[in-house]
Image (cartoon, rainbow, N blue to C red):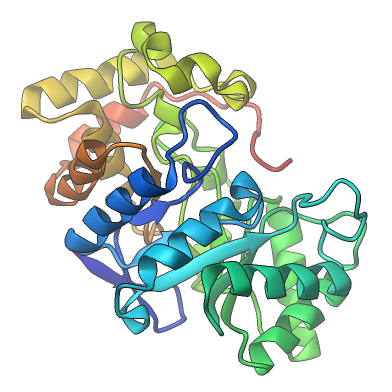
Amino acid sequence: MEYTTLGSTGMTVSRICLGCMSFGTGREWMLDPDESQDLIDRAIDLGINFFDTANVYSTGESEEILGETLEGYNRDAQVIATKVFAEMDPQNPNASGLSRKAIEQELAASRDRLGVDTIDLYQTHRWDYDTPIGETLRALDDAVRRGQVRYIGTSSMWAHQFASALQTSDSLGLDRFATMQNHYNVLYREEEREMLPLCDREDIGVIPWSPLARGVATRPHEELESTTRGRTDQYLEQMSYLQGGGEEINERIQELADDKGVSMAQISLAWLLHKDWVDAPIVGTTSVEHLEDAVEAIEIDLTGSEMDYLEDPYEPLPVTGHD
């Protein structure tokens, strides 16, 4: 395993972050607690110390599973990230969004489920159009000052929104967002236009979600529906990974993988890991074997010409992932 400093935090994280959305119930392809524990155990064996979950994943089950599993390990060696924003209780209008009330309630619930006094990285899951960003940032800053959160981060939004949030923090003397969890992979590169240059300039840690394009970058495009998730993932229909030059990029990933004797997933992850502005892709998997493959991708070297070969067919795509 290789490690890096997460943005300007000074905190050391593994180059692979284990995404925990697959832990719990609610979808056919998700893992039960025992299967989830096996995956977490193997991740730690492989040197992964960075875990990303959210309150909304299986309505809290993911946080519970992660917290219970990590009880058997040195908690100080692990970096736990979770998120707040999405609706947790349809009967409670204050159980979603980024108001002070919602943040304080959901933070308390997440800490309880995770079994920790302090969450290492607490992230806003999306932009809240109904709450002034100043209120959100003050509530998060208070959580840091109370010792309930070490660092704050955020996720997909427009670059102008992120710039406004950073400027608001600076002008009010509040803790600023230290990380950006955004939608970025070899088949979706719209973040390169504005968001990633902004993160680079501001020394923001970048931890992309969907680094394997929801599986589209892991197998030939004609085999997309060969897996349970490929057949049942409702969000996949909203993405445009195979539009424009997507099919050709997919075919080039397969070609490079065959040439190097590795998997398509490893080539796709290696591409991300070669990007200077990426700290740690968030890899979600339901298979120990696929997790091991992801870790091995760290050792794959891509030349400049190979990077160009993967990138050249890319055409602009509709922006997705902000909602």
